[in-house]
Image 1 (cartoon, one colour):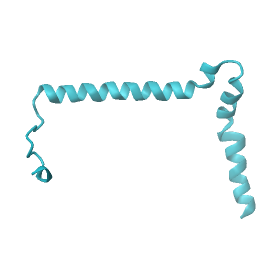
Image 2 (cartoon, rainbow, N blue to C red; image 1 turned 90 degrees about the vertical axis):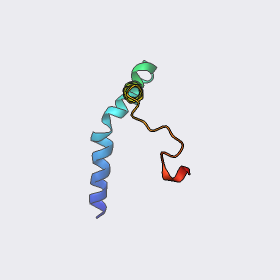
Image 3 (tube, rainbow, N blue to C red; image 1 turned 135 degrees about the vertical axis):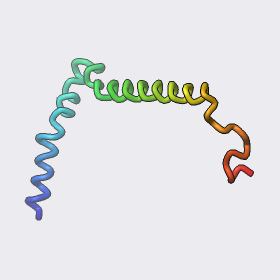
Image 4 (cartoon, rainbow, N blue to C red; image 1 turned 90 degrees about the horizontal axis):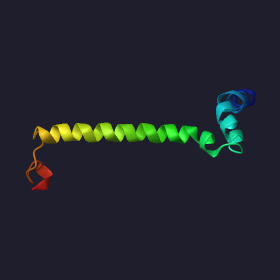
Length: 76
């Protein structure tokens, strides 16, 4: 079993994490390029937020939301 887990360790350290190690080594040359993965995640999150706001506006313009205080049974 020890060889099995060491094989998993080798797979992750030498193959699957190689792109992240390359980004870490790139930090000494360019901080912005080293954090490209973070920038991509922030852009995806911002685009998703804009899409969500657009959908909320569409439903708000159609007056599809029940805004009464008794719209849910637990509100009284």
